[in-house]
Length: 368
Image 1 (tube, rainbow, N blue to C red):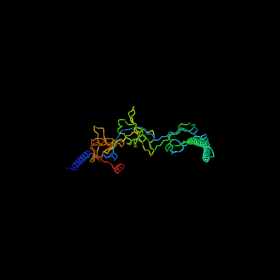
Image 2: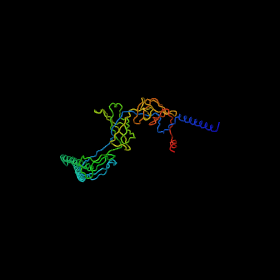
Image 3: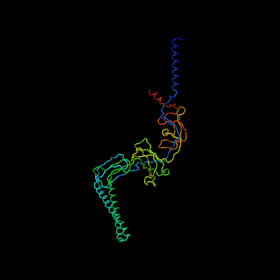
Image 4: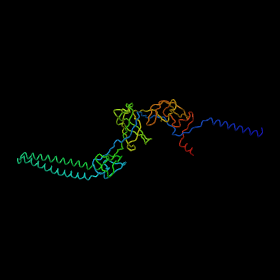
């Protein structure tokens, strides 16, 4: 065979070998790489179930302060949003006329006290004199009546002073308890009369959820039952409280039962007026669970994508109760504790596909 023919045969053999290698490579499935956030493990956890509720948050303690005396507002000491302590002054009302009346009442008490003391001494002296026959019985009776009248006048003077003191104290508007000034409806220079609105003070340490649940779920309600809910403004947070009151009757038009839950608010993160949605935890039990995002509900029966032996397989499952608070669902059949399940977009991976979960080192290598 000539050198030319030898080279031609060698080239043909090389092309054939390359073709076989390409076919072999094409027939081998390529591993799919997913991040650790695409998998979860089926595990045993606590599930809470109960009726859904919705309502509005209100402060447990809200004080609408009104004027108790007439006069001109001479000073505003706090604005809405200010945090105040119990008894802290919020505003001052002109007290000049009231102070004069208070001074007069105090003077009246002093005079009445002197008169009562004299009457008491006269009665004591008359009692001693009648005992030795120095005066008549009627003189003792007159002294006794004078003493009673003087004592009554003293009590009346003390009552007038107490009323004047109350009026004087009312010229300084004070916070009834520690909280936050929520509203101010008066300004310096305004003339107010008794009953005029001045401030609203809210205690944010404890909130109250005023909600309603369907009357059909009344059996699942009890005082002290836990409540879990979310509110507008905090979409990623869950808040908890306990039922403090259940209305004895349902609303005639909505067929809803009013429920009040007390909510601790130590960090003052919740504010009054927010809309809340949640669930009453009427029952709790332990079960095999997985996140809702691990279950595919698009088929006739619910399925999960399980990673087993390095490959994806589709498994039918039976679902139990659903915990809306934790967004987990009970798996009563199809999987066992410790099974690795795919979640989210990874559910769309074709069954039989080799799958590898990336590690931080894999991700660093990929970036480089």
